[in-house]
Image 1: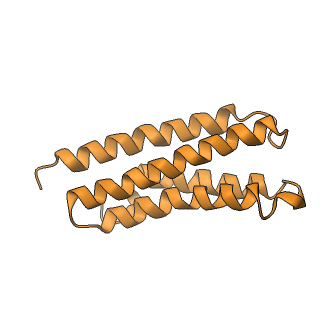
Image 2: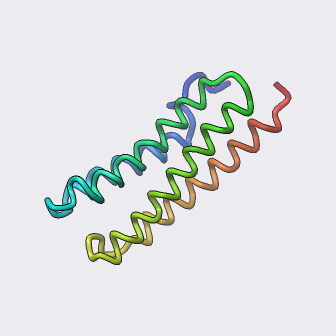
Length: 120
């Protein structure tokens, strides 16, 4: 059965779950970070599944791959925020979050390659 919408993509599902986790996590950050790190982390997190969704509906292969690449770049930015948050003492241990981001990144790489090498 062919995938009919972006919600069926496993990479989107994992990126969405990570975004929800970022919202839960940053909800516990200090109030002074509301317009700083919280805002940046949430923006980067949301950009990942949003760009996957937008890329899914793009018609040209290079255009699709470009949106998946943007999602991957936002994911890498988010990965840095996990490191920063841990170093600032806002997150106890970012190992699991970074591993989730790495797994999503591998999936995005595979998706981009598949799109660019597909016959259609």
